[in-house]
Image 1 (cartoon, rainbow, N blue to C red):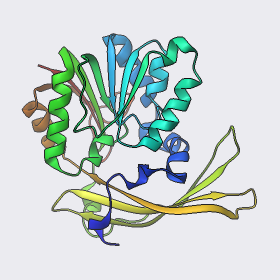
Image 2 (cartoon, rainbow, N blue to C red; image 1 turned 180 degrees about the horizontal axis):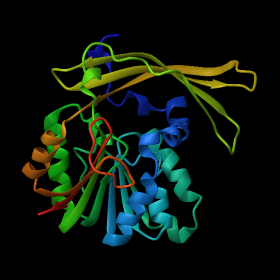
Image 3 (cartoon, helix red, strand yellow; image 1 turned 180 degrees about the vertical axis):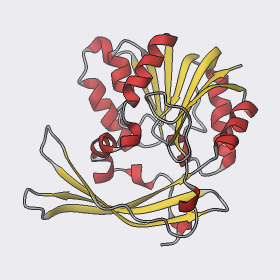
Length: 268
């Protein structure tokens, strides 16, 4: 597997990967409780919410349903189509509070001002160029009201997995409780680039029938850039933010090596 061939966002282009995204996200223990965490922060802050890389609307939809004005920015049209369908299923007073924008997070434009900005589910790490990471945070800072808050969720890389070829995770399966559709995600290979601080994964997504026969399949990939806590602290300071808290999960546990980096910062 050639690491340089891994498109950071190929996974989100469409097909079975996007159709099964929410099901596998629900299985990710590292994200347990994240929707409630973001809802609590929105209730504390009030006002308008900006979600970058809003994806399928997994977080944006509950925010709109809870009464918040929310703008979602997403690079993938396929993901936004799913988010739009979720919003259309809400009562008009709820979906009318949401706006979807198809754009890369480092290049989005808006005249609106927000009180809370979210970068959930490791989405910030799909920016594999540090210049794009800085550019994104500078744009967020410019569209936040004074004292507005930013939340970034990242994984904290275990350094022993950041060289060579990291071990492959076993295949995972998920079933849609509404439609009964069954999916399997299989890791075909992983590769780390310690110089550029990236890790890439190529995978196969399959839809299965009740007997386990394959109905459809495609291969895709993603790449993410990892950052140390010290690097992130400096990047936030450089782009105009004051770090308020760093947690290791959505239950607000203290920062810990190898768990989540959950940053809560304020625009200053």
